[in-house]
Image (tube, rainbow, N blue to C red):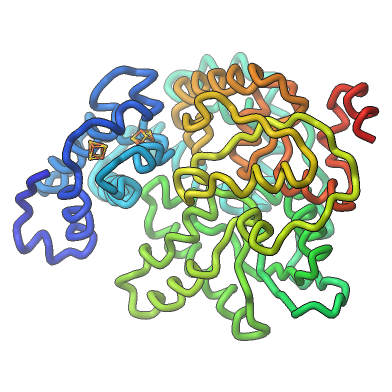
Amino acid sequence: MQTSFNPAQLADPAMAASEKILRTCVHCGFCTATCPTYLLLGDELDSPRGRIYLIKDMLEGGKAASAEVVKHVDRCLSCLSCMTTCPSGVHYMHLVDHARSHIEKTYRRPSDDRLMRALLAFVLPHRGRFRLALTAARLGQPFRGLVARLPRVGNRLAAMLDLAPAALPRANPTNRVGSFPAPSTGAPRRRVAMLRGCAQSVLRPDFNEAAIRLLNRHGVEVVHATEGCCGALTHHMGKDHASHAQAKQTIDAWTAEIERGGLDAILVTASGCGTTIKDYGFMFRDDPAYAEKAARISGLAKDVTEYVAALGLMEPVVETDLVVAYHSACSMQHGQGIRTEPKALLKRAGFTVKDVPEGHICCGSAGTYNILQPEIAAKLRDRKVANIERTRPDLIATGNIGCATQIGKGTDIPIVHTVELLDWATGGPKPAALERVRRETLVAAE
Ligand code: SF4
Ligand code: SF4
C-alpha cells in the first residue's frame, strides 16, 4: 500500500512503525474471510482491510479520530485472526494498538462511553476492586431487567451483570506472593515465575493452583512475584498511560525475581495476558530505562502449555477417557501462534480431543469487548457454543480466562483450563467443574 507520511510525521517512532506496517498491506482482502465482525456485519469497514484504510487515512492525514473511525475500530475484537490469514505479514496488532491510542488521545467519547471505560479501567486490573465489584454485581443481578432498560448504558451494565459468576470462589491460599518449591528429584533445578493475574485470580484461582501442582510434580519451583495486572486490559482500550504503568510494575517485579534467584521462564496461564507480555519488548522499545528489561521479560514469557510441552509431560496416572472440545483462544492461536501443544498434551494425558468447527473465529470475549460491544459478543458466543456442542464433548478445555467466562455463560458443558486436566491426569485432584460431567461418563473414567 502506498503511503505519503511527511518526514515530520515519520520522526515519531510510533508513526514510523505504523507506516511500515501499512506499506506491507497489498489490499488482497484474504483477511476479510476470517474476520468475525466482517462475517457477522458484512460491512467492508468492519473488516481488517477496511479498518486498515480508515486507520491509514486518520494517521496519514494527521487527523483527530472521527466518530466513524471510532465505531469501526471499537468493533474490532483484536482477535488477530486477520494476522494468521494475511499472506503479506501485516502486523495488524501493532497498527490497531496505535489507532486505539490515537483515538484515546484525540477523540472525546460520549459521556456514558467515557464513564464505562473509566470504570472498567479502574476496577478490572485490581483484584480487590474486582472482587468487590463482582459482589455488587451479584446483588444487582435480580434487577437485571430494570438495569437493561436504562438509557444508553443499560445493555452494557446488563452485560456486566451477566458475566458475574453465581458464586465467587473463596480466596485461594496459593494466590499469594512467595515460592512454591518442588520436591527434590535430583534433576537439574528449574525455577519459573508465574503471573497471578488480576481477573483470573479472583474468578478462577484454581487455574493457577493446578498449574503450580503440575509444575512442582515436574520438578519446577514456581514463584509468585509482587506483580499486579500485566496491563493488557487497559492496553486494548488505548489507555497507554495506565497500561504502561501496570506493565512497568510487572517488569520491575519479575526483574527483581531474576536478580534474586534467576528464572528459567515466566509462565502465563491466561493467553490474553501472555500475548501482551510477549509484546513488552515492542511496547517499550523506545524507552531507554525499560527497553532492555522489557525485552528480557518478553523473551522469558511462555504460555504454561508451551513450557510443559517442552519439558515433557510425565505418564498419566489416572484414566481420563473423556471427550474434550479444545477451544483455542484467539490470543493463543493467532496472538502467540500456539496451536498444537495444548492438544498434544491433552492427548498424551489420555483425553480424546475434538477440534471445534470454525475454531479460528473468536468467541466474543476479547478482554472488555463482551461488556463494551455486548450484541456482537453475544452473537459470537452463541455461534461458538453451537460449534462446540456439535462435537458432543464431555467438557471444554481452554487456556484463557476470558474465553472460559464467555463460553461458560452460554452452555452447561463444564469448562476448565487445560492445566487442570493435565494436573488431574498426572496425580492432582479432579477439577471441581467436572462434578457436572455426566455421572456415567465419569464412572467409566475412574
Ligand atoms: S490479507 Fe493482509 S495484505 Fe491482504 S488486505 Fe488483509 S491485511 Fe492487507
Ligand atoms: S483483529 Fe479480528 S476483528 Fe479485528 S480486524 Fe482482525 S480479524 Fe477482524
